[in-house]
Length: 445
Ligand code: TRP
Image 1 (tube, rainbow, N blue to C red):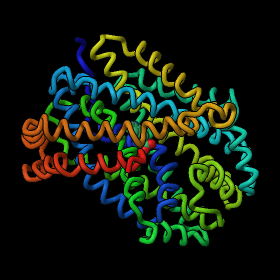
Image 2: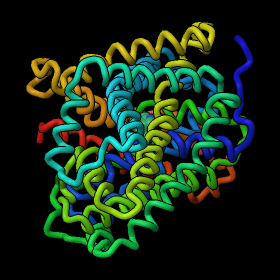
Image 3: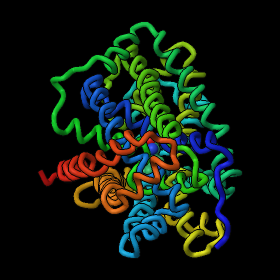
């Protein structure tokens, strides 16, 4: 077997993992999900879930990768024997499903970056902008070409390898991302009337909390932290075997939470200052915000900055979704990285075609009454990822158990008491909660 690459430094790993975590999930999905689920009340539950489940499962994935120095399939197989290999394979397949619809949204983002730069979004009328969005996303060739362009960017980055491709891209793009995010949030909070947006995000409305709020928060937390498909496992596998993990894990979580909060603080004041609805759902980013950008002073700069931010966030996440499949085929089957990248990117893109077409061009493309796009999103986010996270928690907590504990406390710089607490969470708290959200989100209870 060829020698595997390592990250150039621990900071490089943290940047790459944060790049994976901070994505469309934080900037596009989090604000509207918080909006639909009671704003500040949702936020409290979300933070609690991140602290309990996010930290424990994220650490489980990273330790599993670091200890085995293998891809998801190889990692499960090495510690658990052949019967555990399908657990890793499920992750690889989940990645294909996620990326297939992720590139479609990323393609729209590129389109909106171009449109906002060219002054093509210059309307304050949400109806008009809504029609424009439907025309773009419901088209045939334009969205496909944009998704392909985005996929080519992803492939070119991943093809460069771990240090010279993924790490280098994140080292440049993550500081840019946070700079844009902070700048936009500061500007938004100075808008007259924007304070109501901040209040909406931070003031809890407990009357909006129900069982579904918890499910939504848990799904959002796992999606945002890139858990449940071996993504963080794979990034962890490029760490050197004795790299300390406590601080790195804390940094990844903090950056992800801060990015979501900043995105909320950049978006909600705008929404309120210009009197549009915070519960606008997935269209918030592509319809509601452009209307506000057109109306605000400096919108000609803020608009392109926002869509640049969104494109960068999508890119650093998408490369991490592709990497588990790449590392599996190169580690286990000896494929060259270049060939693997193009094969996997093409498969994802092909799977993205029906997703894109189901947005309007071919409304008949449905599975179980959902558009193909929504079906992929649902299958991945509500079923495959929670299942993957459940398997990871059970595997690390119960099967690897003592070994995981030693791995964490002996060589990772985590105090034994924390390590033991971590194992208890993985054993007794995460599995039942994940089963519960699986039953809830699939409508079984
Ligand atoms: N976390 C990313 C976001 O918030 C998306 C993502 C990257 C992801 N890798 C993942 C989601 C793995 C689930 C699983 O947009």
